[in-house]
Amino acid sequence: MRMDDIEYHMPETLPQACALLSAHGAAAALLAGGTDVVIALKYGVLGARHLVSLKRIPGLSEVTREPGGGLTIGALVKLSDVAGSAAVRSVCAALAEAAGQAGSPLLRNRGTLGGNVCLETRCWFYNQNESWRDSRPPCLKAGGDQCYVNRTQNQCVALFSADTPAALIAGGARVRLAGPRGERSLPIEDLYSNDGLRPLARENGEILTAVTLPAPRPRSGSAYLKYSVRESIDFPVFGVAASVALDSKGGIGDLRLAVTGVKTAPMRLVEFEAALRDRAVPQENDSGLAGIASRTLGTLYLTDTVPHKRHVAGLMAVEAVCRAAAAARDGRTA
Amino acid sequence: MKQRIQLTVNGETHDLVVTPTRTLLDVIRDDLGLTGTKRGCDLGACGACAVLLDGRPVNACLVLAVEASGQEIVTIEAIASGGKLHPVQEAFVQQGAVQCGFCTPGLVVTVKALLDERPNASESEIREAISGNICRCTGYVKVLDAVRAAAREQMGVAR
Image (tube, rainbow over all chains, first blue to last red; front, side, top):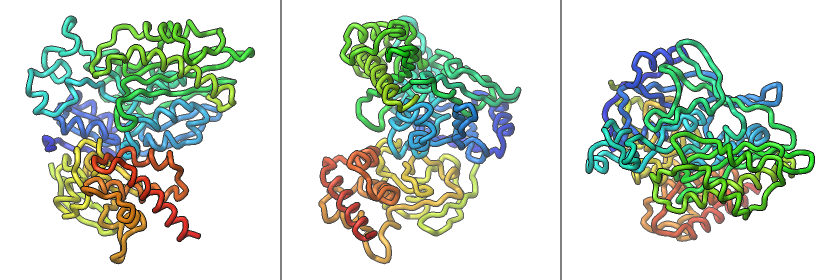
């Protein structure tokens, strides 16, 4: 597939990269592993005229254990390295599981954690080649004036579809951003704008440099479950991560549960968490709980073709809690 | 604007001038004439274009050539050596794991990397390692037979 020509920059430092992004604004795109950006270029949906490569920026590719027991993962660490890292597995197993299920092994050898965290939202009507999209006027996300999925409100509902952010939210992660005005750190949930058109709440010129995870809570365990049409290569139709901290009776002391593939941002299921807190670990086939989880998903804009999504999601949410609790019981930590 | 790059492919370093949007797949096939690596989906979803980049199998169709400058690339052409097939290739032939052959270069490169790293790969590790390589002909049964046979052969040689 031919791509329109684009200007390619290879800054040597983070400030240079931020300056390039600032200078070109919406006309610039960051290039990390390229497994999404290059496809977007081939599809003709990436409007950028400038590509800013992060390849030469030092210090973004390490996994570092912090003195307090937490972990810092550089934005350019490959997903296959996140998946295979004993350090990651010991601090947040759900993250290792999520990274290990993103895409395919070949894609994971190029795709980065930062790229997955910042993944562009997706929709059946948007992620298509030019000749497919030419059969109708462009959708909102492609610069047109209508959404083909949410026709009533005419608002972009392109789905957030990356695997790792659900696990990172469950793990209590923060992200570090570097920009023209300096560095800042924020809870990962705050990185997302809930806007299908511009999914990241980052300022012009800001670059995600690292993800940080706190030390795991005592007697805790986590898990990530993914439902996709095929077991490999595909984005999640639905992904759910749970992190459970057991109380002294072996019940659910605390629970964090987050989903992907549901809205324009990854989402914590707060109501479902509340329903489970301070009670015994459920049975995997608890249909009442599954029903609660299903309902808390809210409106589903089906930009994929899976009509039983709500039902499956509810069952998976309960299963994720059970698996996380089992991991906690087995002392597999985090 | 065109960029000067250096690509080391199968041990040889090439000086090339490329536009930024040319992929590694474009360059190795069209500029270097190494057509063993195949263009399947051109979107990273089929694995027919797999090459080794610093030892790791990747989809060449998604690597911009400018990004691979300075890295070591190994293609299917370099898997055999001295006119002799690599044990992985020999096993694919012996086990009947090749039908149309279009997926084969990508599979061979991926499997070679797997067995180099994990000669003792388990059944589930093998299946996971090739889960990014799609084959429309074989149903994968003989492909898996070939990987197991190659693993046994390599382990035997190592002993």
